[in-house]
Amino acid sequence: MTTTENRILYLVCCAAVPAVRVADGVRAAQDRGWDVCLILTPSAHRWLEADLPALRALTGHPVRHQYKLPGEPDVLPPPDAILVAPATFNTVNKWAAGISDTLALGLINEAIGLGLPVVALPRMGAAQAAHPAFPRSVEFLRAAGVTVLLDEAGNEDPADGGEAYPWAKGVAALPAVG
Image (cartoon, rainbow, N blue to C red; front, side, top):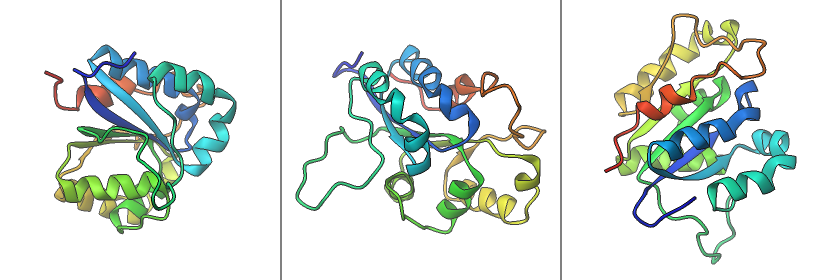
């Protein structure tokens, strides 16, 4: 479902319950005109390993989860924007600290330096959302230009299998494709 006229969105998916429904996020972005490339954290890759062929078919791109070797070509086009969804406690805090120990973190850290539009839609339990590091990290990321979408419930992870995760809210916060 890719076309050269669409803008490129990197959907960076972390290992939180909604990850099992990442195809819903891909479709939501495609419906808004994005050509979606899927980047998984190592844990999300492990969770979704059986779904990788279907996700490759849905996006029309390889699904990446680790750094390429030096000299290997990039297999994905460069992004015009990035959506980090679901963004976990671990990823949000490492990102704010500038840690790039995974491909997903490396790409979202570079996105800040490149001035790309980046939206993060966190999903974590209430106890993690209440940890003092989390609001500091959110404040830092927002000051760096990242749109961090939070709800009043602290984005507590419901026991609904990720069905209620607001993929469309994250996609709607991205710049319009045009």
